[in-house]
Image (cartoon, rainbow, N blue to C red):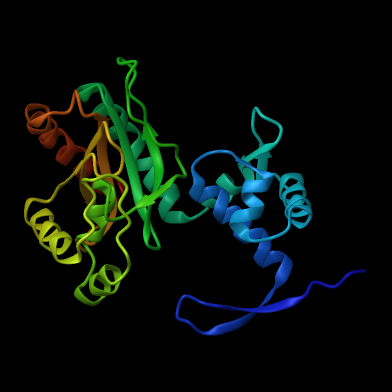
Length: 266
């Protein structure tokens, strides 16, 4: 029987630890597919995890056999499977959040006509954990549940980023701020000032900073200790979400965040 090789990787604190090579590679594949937010082909997965296609194929087939990945409508494309979703939902906070937010998000969608979302922090990104899509419009903005997005260029992300402590924010702002559109904040000092405004007003706007043609407004969900544990948002096309609509949406957004916070029974 072939034994799994060990290799050194770094933990989040920079300390090297021994890992099982095959497990490490399989987890890297899952992370790559999760971050993509779309189906990926074998060659693309192989390139992103820096493994040869034959090794990647065997790992994908193993993950598929255990339902951690599945093939999409196109047989040569892969996405996360139900088992990965099941394990994610086993996290107590996520389970509680998803149960608490569905009714309020549906009401928010119905009252605004736009897509309502809930996201949490996942490392240096925001992770969509629930979404109620707009129904009355053909043109709408949606992100799949499980999709990860940057903190500095999205409304939900900036709400979370604004909750960072001084040292943690300084560490984040030392990282390159990737531009996604010409409106993305890429200067650390400018973004720091913007985050201070978000803290004062308790909401953030993504004004086509992540994707042209899309706007999003978000506000934090807090626990009893006043800590930001999630962000709730409304997203839609820029042509529909102008200043007057934002003014109308904000009280509804604040009300939804309060309802979700209260439902968590902290």
